[in-house]
Length: 412
Ligand SMILES: Cc1cc2nc3c(=O)[nH]c(=O)nc-3n(C[C@H](O)[C@H](O)[C@H](O)COP(=O)(O)OP(=O)(O)OC[C@H]3O[C@@H](n4cnc5c(N)ncnc54)[C@H](O)[C@@H]3O)c2cc1C
Figure 1 (cartoon, rainbow, N blue to C red):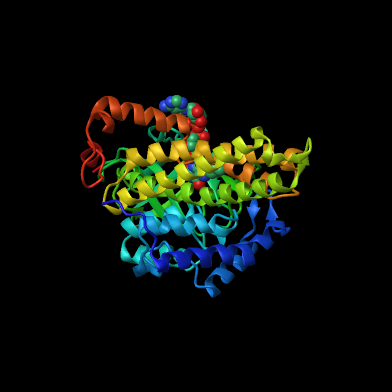
Figure 2 (figure 1 turned 90 degrees about the vertical axis):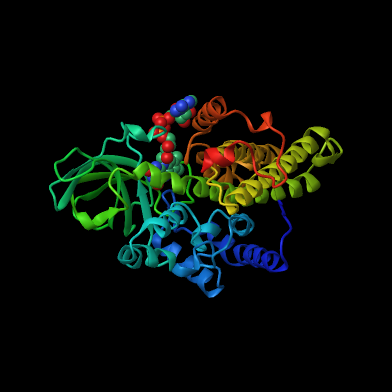
């Protein structure tokens, strides 16, 4: 049975998280080390040490690797609280791409790989990247993957160009997606590799100038120039990259929803305060229906976003992979939360587009959410295909256990 009651322990953890973010992390929002390419590594380390001291680091990770082993629903509550500042997740080591990378690594790493490349990330000592997107290859359609890996029986030689690779500059744990070419030594196809960021052949050509500033070291253009990796650098099996990436997909999409829910809620709170105090035409602007309707719609959108997040998290806690459900949630929530933030800018009037409040930063930082981990249109394309193939959950009556029909089977 769906139960969205929050235990006293979880409520206390969320309150402690929110207080930590407000007291310790919000002041960094004006730190000069928050650059156009995001927080520098130095700033990240400083914030991570604060979260470590507060015992709020890597809460979402499995206990075997040093986390608290929270359920998806518990993660939803805590990550929403962390998102009150767009720097909160960075401090608490639950930001993208590390959070999703730690998830996938904890599922498929060999023990020796976990020790070398996962543990230091969980402990907040080093960062990780997931290098898939290409200027002329993999993007919305990963099947267009162009980066090639040639296997000679003992080593892979990787060549290709990637871009939009978050945190590439300075990251030490690298997950690389490349297509193993047909060879006489074994299988081929899209494959994941795991290696050190300073391996010769990984060349960071530049960091792109983007509208968001919340991701550590921004988004890099990376060339793999005869990158030579031993067979032991395989992450999982040859040819299985898309299957492994799918494992990361649903949880990673949902953690974006959780964090951005917190950020949108903060923008909303600033807009409410402004609507109470700023006057126009003889009364507080919030008493004009045009403004109160905007605030009301924000409240509705935040509520719907939270419920959709929690329900999808609950489904994942029931063991459902949730590919379809997380597509529905991510596409809807990313659009709604961005509209919330846009309305907050409008309620603030001219100062909404200035850095007099943090709303402008939240607006810029949040905009890419509608693109990464699947643009809205691609999710709708997938949802449409799924309902044509499997039917709609609304063609059946709800089940007593609250699980959607027929996606229980489809998602497994
Ligand atoms: C801030 C940010 C960080 C990122 N970090 C990483 C990272 O760390 N690692 C990584 O590998 N990638 C990363 N990406 C890349 C991201 O995953 C891609 O941007 C995303 O997959 C879309 O691919 P694309 O940019 O190539 O767009 P394209 O594939 O070129 O698509 C462009 C547009 O076409 C439309 N479209 C595409 N397919 C369909 C369809 N079937 N139906 C309808 N419309 C469609 C959509 O509107 C889409 O926005 C990041 C992107 C951003 C913006």
